[in-house]
Image (cartoon, rainbow, N blue to C red; front, side, top):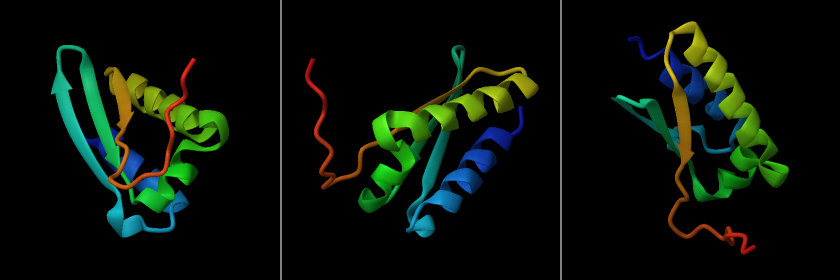
Length: 91
């Protein structure tokens, strides 16, 4: 299996953030498919997640399409950076 999904995610995220040198993508493959873990600069979290998670949802949709082309299930995990000001929702 190729790393098209990882390269695509890096290119996409580096295009929308202010600190492209801080973008890191780790790729793990197991029986569930491909897991891409995204790490970005703490100031870029808002740009990656988007309003109400819309950007993150769109990125996941695009990764799903890349996965279908490569016969793989691709999942995205966005890691919260140290010192982030994000407050988890409580429901």
